[in-house]
Amino acid sequence: MDENVGRAAVSIHAVRDFRLHLESMNNVPQITETDLDPMDPSKHILPEELVRYSIVIPTRGRQDSLENCLHSIRSLDYSKRLYEVIVVFDGDTENYRCVEAIWNPVNLNLRSVIQERTGPAAARNYGARLARGKYLGFTDDDCIVPSDWLIQADLVFDQQPDCLLGGRVQPATSINLYSVASHVLLNAVYAFYNSDPCQARFFASCHMFMPRFSFHQLQGFDSSFWTSEDRDLCARWSSQGWPMWYQPSLVIQHNQRDKFVSFVRRHFGYGKGGYRFYLKQARQNRIVFRVAPKEFYCHLATHLFKLGASPRNYLLICLLLISQIASLFGFVSEAASSQFHSTKKHLGQER
Image 1 (cartoon, rainbow, N blue to C red):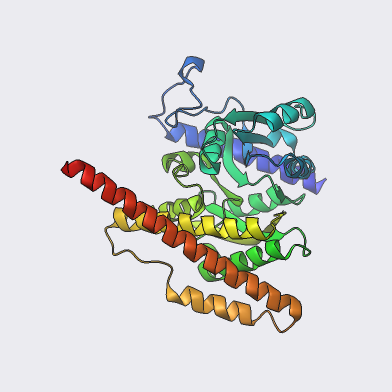
Image 2: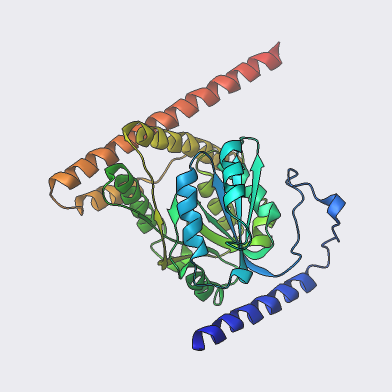
């Protein structure tokens, strides 16, 4: 009984907050069906009915993982009338048709759309433009959410309704050491950048929530990034002076299925995205180009030392070192490519 009353209260508060927000937005024009173009980033669908959460999932080529993710969302201990799921297929026509055939509104309040292959950041933006919820929730197709996921999010938004919210990301299995190594690294990043939960600085894009209107005001993810788009979004959010909140009790499981080659390729890509991120920061803020502070690497070394002495942990440390080497090569590769194109453009202008 108490639980039902609590959910009713959430719904009432959501209606009240949403109406107040609309009343405060006197400059928002009325949009008709002919005005809507989901491929135009300047236009997005306004809510036709109240939805508290819009969960956006970009996907490509991982139907089994996506099915597991959707099953976990369908099992949420939350009224299905208060959330919707938007799956954006990034150029994946075959799996798009399969999901369309399997899922229907009776199983889950789900909409699936397909775009040309333009990357996960563009896919998230596309899903956000179609969203009707007060809050956007982003996760990945290989993530599993717990049944109290949205309840935990409500606990934060009741206190901090305007924040960018992030939670913990754990490996779904301890068997795959490549996945464990990646998440040990992510935990170290979170421990460094989110040491003060109410003044957090970074969340991974596989697990974050935020007010939808704030997301659009920030113009969403930078779709030129194929990796590190989350770092860029968090940096732009913080630069606005908007709050970021880290909630450790908000947990999802990330079922990465990396093998050695895909593990190295993943961290190589992180390095490429890292260079683009720091270059953008330097250009926009007119500051000297700089990478991660040396304090972070000291923190990472301490974090590795705390793993303890065992054959398994020694192997994890080796994988973490490999990940950093791959990231460094990706960083240097992107720097060289950027310099090459810059020089080529400069020579072309001189001619």
